[in-house]
Length: 352
Image (cartoon, rainbow, N blue to C red; front, side, top):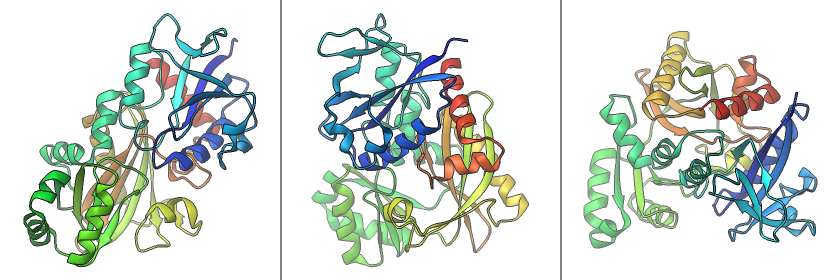
């Protein structure tokens, strides 16, 4: 049986560039090599695309960029190429499918998905519209509200309105949500730019921090309870994993807790009642289909301590694939090994 050629794209012009490198190494190392030939295509923080043929050990620290064998190359939108064009004029590289292991901006929010769609190259993950909506917390929350899916109380502003009348925005948010308040850039992942504000002074600083990452800012009430995640896998009839629980080592599950501290606990299965676990999984499937997701998404929830209410926190359409990431661990606990998961993802991409 002829092996398929798949491209793994990593890095990117994003605040989550480093996490992408770690995820990509894990993905490449676990792809079944008896089924797939792997092409590695990296994007520097400056936006330069390069074919990389070295060892994956050079990915996490960024030293892959210094490999003398790198070739400037990029995905062509021309359908006749169906793959990668080399800038030096070498033979194009035909690819059967691509996995954009690109977390955050310029990779997870629909831009890359649009390129693959133009090129008619099958790709792992959600399509353009779904990726864009799930990336934008304001759009996503409006859709979930309209569908009656439970969420924490929230509000938003754009940076222009805030600068025109800071007091109006802050007064409104304080009255609606109460402290502490989570402040988030609308378009960012991995908890980048997120702050938990306990008073007005912290809220003002948090808005400045979030505004450095996006022009739209989302505010959320603090929910006390279990932080639950489940992995969704599939296209039209998705599979939902068992539930896992996050036990953050920091005040909340921020970037450091996710990737750097190494002390965050993951409890699989989550220590919640069976009926709540079923409700989380059913809600995850409902939201996945509502938002038009395909391939994969990690759905993050709260189960509120005071009344057991299940609240959807956010979807993550390209979740972490590092050695400590919840998405592959949840599916492994559900009977799907890491190599089997990657094989399924490529099959789902080519089925779409």
